[in-house]
Image 1 (cartoon, rainbow, N blue to C red):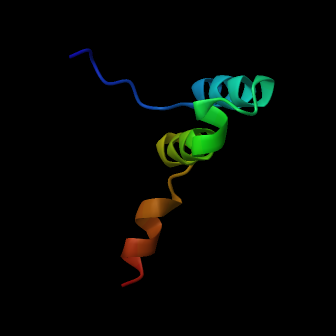
Image 2: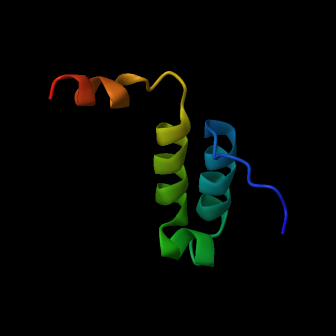
Amino acid sequence: MGRETPMDWEAADRIAEAGARDPHSDTAVSGFDDRAAAAAATNDPRNDDQDDDLDDE
C-alpha cells in the first residue's frame, strides 16, 4: 500500500472542483468533497484551538 498523505486545502479544492465539473459523479453525489474539506480543516496547522478545549477541563 502507498504512503498516507494528510488532506490539505489544495487537494480538497481539487476534489470539490472535480465534483462541480460532473455533478453526477461518485465524488459529487457521495459527499466526498465535504469530507475532504473537513479533513483539510482538521489537518490545517492554523487550527491549533483543538487542544485548547482540553485545557479548560
